[in-house]
Length: 460
Image 1 (cartoon, one colour):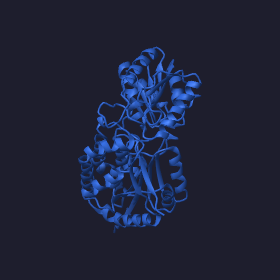
Image 2 (spheres, one colour):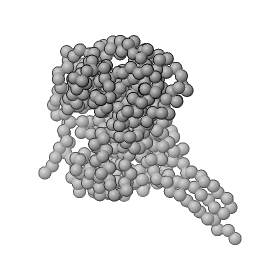
Image 3 (spheres, helix red, strand yellow):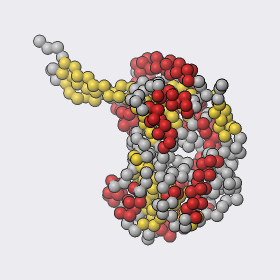
Image 4 (tube, helix red, strand yellow):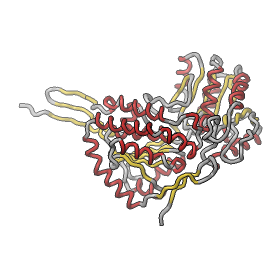
């Protein structure tokens, strides 16, 4: 009996798209065809692979006028923000530019007797499981460098953004990338786990929830398949006493609320030096009270619905529990708040780390703000989390930011910015945020395996 995946639009709760899942045997056959095609793809000149990938990227860009409203329908991001192609193109372009360096042989030494070097060899079949919150940018993080490195790639996208992988595959195929080299697939959880457990893939890159990452690792147990994970976050901001308050408010509150708070590295808790706390709070409240909650297809809307009613329900529960425990919710309920996917953005004070809103991932438009007296208190609070993706430090003193950053358990340290993925830097995390490293030169190292050559010359 066939099964379908349904994308439920947060705009009105209707079924926006449906696709039938592929059966296990059919998926195995597809992967076998891709495995057969991988050697020939890897044998193509590097520049040819780069050119084809970048042509695919450009073809996605040519679809942007259709993609933007499609994303609004699928996951609720307002059309006024124009989609993801800027970041999508930036990341792919950077990985293309550094490919020769990232994939170059590591020269160990050569003399009259020996030649020694280490090659970067593609894994083979790479399986990318991408999330719905930034569906194009998160996918291209792995798809572009994996293909450039000589792997073949199978993409499985989240049901909430069901059409994204299909669009990417169509664009890349139109640009000349064979379907046996890169394609999209619709799978249910059981089939996905069975494929991983059956050693169908040589490398798995998963972005999603902690529970989803655990399922991936359990499925791969005993197969020795590499699994890279980017999971939950509870990213902090710390505003020091010498910070530019206006800049800190603008960036941190945007980092907390943009995309209805549904960002991997969104700001979910803010610690402000006690001397700036009242000023920071007043300015933050003014920003949030100026938002326009509404239909994401309307240009006036600055904050749309959350992607799913159940996601909004979790955020409401965290807020209600915090208020019951003594926190203050400062934003009055917006008239457009329907008790479902359309949720009032919220700022909380009087919070502490006994509350779930300061511990659990919220992944929604809510942020708790706490005063702190010094760096030591801020560091302790920032590290008091099961997650470790990014932290945002606000100060005029770069040496101080580096000292504080060295003591924070996180994958990235920002100073005077937040919620941005620089493709020149390794995108990584620690603790329950998972293990892996995307983009940068390290991204190429993770999407290949080292192969050593120790060649003894024949001498007389």
